[in-house]
Structure formats: C-alpha cells, structure tokens
Image 1 (cartoon, rainbow, N blue to C red):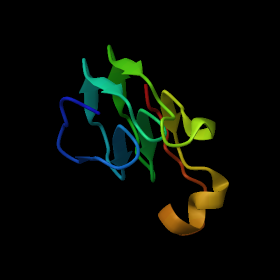
Image 2 (cartoon, helix red, strand yellow):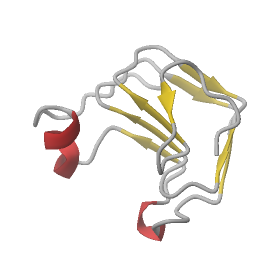
Image 3 (cartoon, helix red, strand yellow):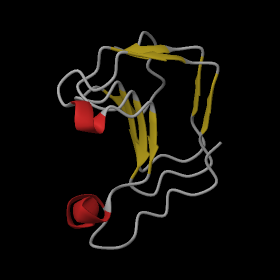
Length: 93
C-alpha cells in the first residue's frame, strides 16, 4: 500500500484515492499490492500532480480493475460519487 499519505488521501481497495480534492501532490510514493487500482483520482478532483511514484502488483483483488493510475469515475459510478453528473476530474498531471 502507499507508504506516504498526503492530507485528504484514503486507504480502500485502491492504493491511493483522491476524492474531491484540488491541487494535492503525490510524489515519490510506492503503491502496490492493492485490491484494484494503485492510484485513483475521482469525484471532481482537479489540478492534482502525480509523479515519480512506483506502482506495482495492482489488481490483486480483481484483475479486471488493476489500473496503475485511474482518473475520473466510470459512468456506472456517477450516481454514487457525483450526483449522476459526469466526473469532471480535470487538469490532472
């Protein structure tokens, strides 16, 4: 799992999850052995910076969802996370 958690990050089946955060930075973290994705930026998270991370062993719970970096939310999850609006997780880098 993630070895360093900036403020606002949460542990779930995802190595790192950012939801409804603007402008956090995730740098030089190790993300791995997660249930699904290693890093997930969702729920209108914008202007985030993700760089210099080591991502490994994703999809340990479900190989179908083993993304290294996932930005936004699948439209099937909009009712849960975004009030049925498209997840505009924009300008992430």
